[in-house]
Length: 501
Image (cartoon, rainbow, N blue to C red; front, side, top):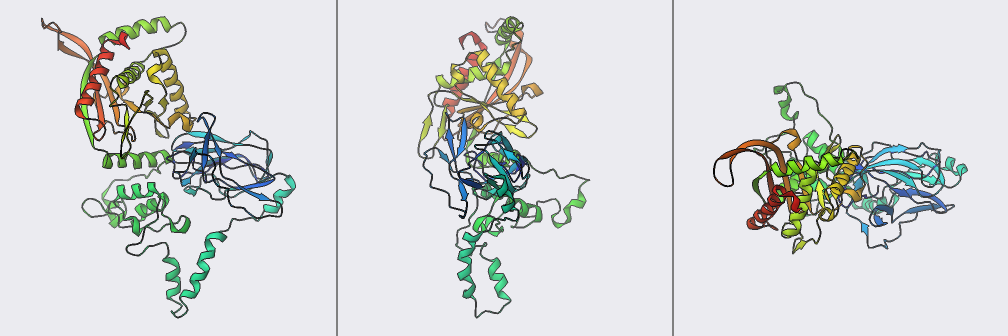
């Protein structure tokens, strides 16, 4: 299973696009479906790579490592990475869907599967002609490890039958286990099985091997990661192991009071009305883990201000009247994106990231916009928003939102971003506070515009005005209160006098 983005840790096979006589497989990651590419060279591609490299101006990913089964040869180890752009953070994935069946012929460029990751939904394309000999990981499989063999591809159709009974073996990992057998010759036969089951569980003081997301998930659920049985390579604890511990009550699942928190644990379910358990999507799992980590590790503080919308509403109506014939339309959110980008340039202290031992300030503003989809929350990025006009921002936002709702976002559409906007105004929400999306240092929560009676600027009386509340959530490690207030002042100025944008 390849790592398809810097944050992907697991996934599921959505669909095989080719049959055993064909090309490659797909990997379904944490959140959306991503395009992967297999490689055929003088034989059979049998293992998805451990790493991906960014290519073509970061718009596409290609496999860096590959395993090729040559005629008469075995399964060679993957060559060393030789590209500085390798994304090696991910250790698990999930294939969403295979588009081809075993035995099908594949042409170079054919889509053979769909991939879901925490970043996007894309299509897996074969890079060369061939035949899918066998699919080893079925669609829908979860927590597929990076480097795991998921399919076999051959160059000649006649070679497909040679892999009818092929099954991957853990020969390499199993080898070290052989010497362990003589360790207990004196012990009775009964303790031997226990010794075999114990390696995944470290003794006191030993390091617990677990994926980063599994650790975050376990911490959020109150689970001792050391007590969770790992099913990954060499006993590594993965997210599915933690999920199983939550569902079964293993791993000492406790709430704040120390009592069980799962619905069925200790028979508490009988005290609740009839219910239905809804399985989490990959996007939901990763979103939950990241937001929990953010709230636990990022020192948030919040600043709110009311923005008068009268001038902006009048200008928007004027612009939309001129765009009506062309079918265009400028939204309030487009103004928010533009004003935010301009304010980020004016106050660079907010356009920054916490890097551990330093603060990184960006020269341009790439604004991420939260979009709700059936699969979960997606946050595509409007790159170079500070250099785009209202029409350009409107076109970018509409295109990205459409791709998000269709599950067609690419990793490049969501990786990065220096600032995020979350707008719930269309739902009538007056105000709210959003959670910072690391490594960004701030996120703006936008509420609905409302009519209020306010004092006139000249102080001669009162008048009705359209007012919108916005709340800036800040990472206090990066942004001081005065910096956040200065940014809000700049944002308010651009919104209340939109011709200055």
